Image (cartoon, rainbow over all chains, first blue to last red; front, side, top):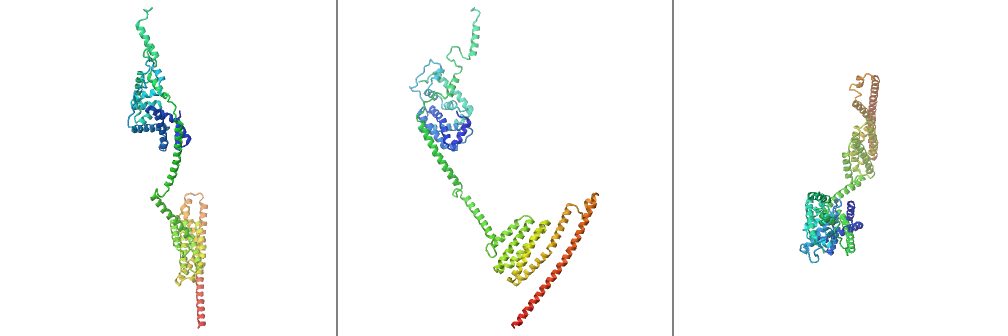
Length: 185
Length: 341
């Protein structure tokens, strides 16, 4: 993990297109953006493309970026969200994930903790796709990407309290999904 | 013994155990206190690891080449923006205004430099004179004005020398007149100054006046009759000025000293020391000083009277000499006329 000071430094140098800073920016954020895109689309190839496009767009717009104390991560995920929205608009359909035959019922006898340990990325994606869009967004940004409630609120256009409420409901929903054990392959 | 432990006790024990283990029910599937916490922990660790990306390296090289291209583009844009900032196309009104101001400044500077050495007859000479009068009107203080007038009178002398050498008759008298008026003004401003500064001014004026006399003598033959008469009157005034200049200087010094004393309150209107009236101690020596000053004043008045007498004598002698010269000239002319007849 990079510290806040390092993030500020990278952002300021990236604005001047210093290769070393751009390299570090890619190394730190590419996989995170790819993971986010995957849990939103469920397609690894597409996630890779979208993460790449996000970073390319970011360096094109980095001249307009105003750092408010290590906020480059939030800025990048904002670009990622917009890119995803554009992608969906182009495709002309909402993201609908259905449990197909690939994801069979789990071994119901096992305790939930063991279920969680054995969970694959595909299963997590299926579980997340069962959540409403806002809840899924909050889970991804708040827990997987580690942004605080205020930053997530800014990204999704809600207040921090509303983000916490969404997060609580999302966790409750995930609990029910895992308790039912219907996500494992 | 079994009768000792009642059902009530067993329930109590179960409650205590539940509380200490923080579980809902002993032996149930839910051994972890909060399943939600486990979910959160799993999510916070980033969830299940994704398989490594296949195209990460190629994506990175593409991203870096894009970034470098953007950097070059940004540099070009910055350079062109800097050029635009100073270009006439971007700000035509400002550019026009700046060009106009620059042109005016250049013109004024060029006129200033060009006219500084302009001599009578040169088209820039009037610019030079206008610049001089503007300069004097903008000067603060009598001292600066006194010296500036003296400086410009010296310039008129140089110009007079120039016009005499080139036989530019029509310029002679105006320059003499300007030089004299400059000297008068220099003297007027000098009289308002301190005695030591006035001495400097009057010394400079004296030098210029002596030179002016010489130039007037040289220029007399190149003037018209009326101009000649006026020039003679100017020369007379200059002579008187030179004779009386030393007396004026002494008078000015005296006036200045008296003014200073009055200001500092040492001398009352009756000539008695104010401090001497109020304070008895030290009255003797102050009265002696006053007597000395009175004596000095008397001596100076006597000297001034003598000077005035001498001045009158000089004037009379000069008039007699001029009269004799005039008579001699007339005799010479009559003789020549007789010879020619």
